[in-house]
Image: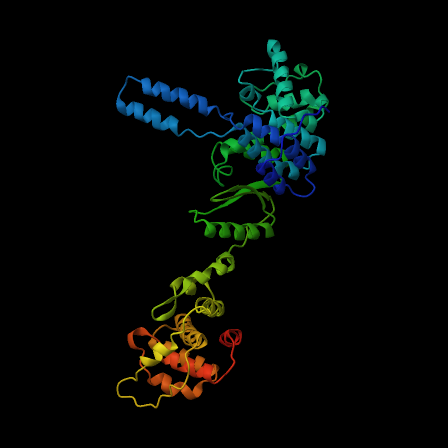
Length: 468
């Protein structure tokens, strides 16, 4: 093989290498040897030629002497014509076709021919001239093969003795135009022509994938997809079919979690993920495989979402003028236990040692409900721990009430239960008698002050453990 100075590794080649499964040595070599040169040489070349055509058509539309509406329509049409760079086109097709290559069980030599043939399949666009491997154009075509094989470092990836085998595959990537299967034009073939005919199907499939597949259902439905389905049936001996799953909307993280859960369900019945899109996945499915059971997907999606966002749910808990509060999303996202834990954790983050306690201020404003007579004992000192107990326990009562029946009555019932659970039963009469003026939890500050007084030396860690 010839050698060429290797171009430095780019972030994209590194990412592509991470996508390669263990044992796919040929694909890894193609990424290491050819792809860096591919990115340098072909990133600015149009795969469909729409770039140059669009510019020409836009110029023609600008000079059009017909109506303004006609010109605007032409501009709108050609300004939005889809295209992609040749480098992206080759990468998309090569990786998409690779899944089928694996299922078909091609030898390592056949795998190299597939990748080399597809790399060169758009030689005319790469060379910017219409060259054909027949008649007077033969030498020009072979010269173009040599030039671009050198520029892409292809002969380091595959032995140059296979140049005509590569030319055969590249030339026959399309059925309708440009194909040349006359073996007399390939005097130097090293591979059985029957094998090359089969390999040309893989090259053609890779080309179709890059031009037809924009949504997960595109290869399973419609006339254009018939070519792909025919090739799949042929190269995989009719043992596989195509299927897909699709979401109606793309909602970022939520959609990604849904995709992942459906992928797991599909894997359990043997569906092999093939092509990935923002709105779903196309699968290659064994003929005898059934449909995945997705009945548990909603539950699994919720659990997965909660796990993923749990670290960020702390932002849903904050402190206002009336104490610790939480947004409704906390209850919507988390199970009761985790919601309670999150509230407690945030209490100790928010009311940290740098905060000035408000126990004394709350003590001065504490009043009894009208018509109630209870002896209050204000013999306790202000402290952050008293504030933490007061605001944290009150917030926990609200959390419980939200999960198990909202309303003041329920909140009071859960408040009583929390006071008993923390061993403060004797202070319940006072707690029930004190007024929550202006929405401030004065009863809770009273109990919190006594809780700390009755446990001298109580540290924040011990208090947090009690509240948890």
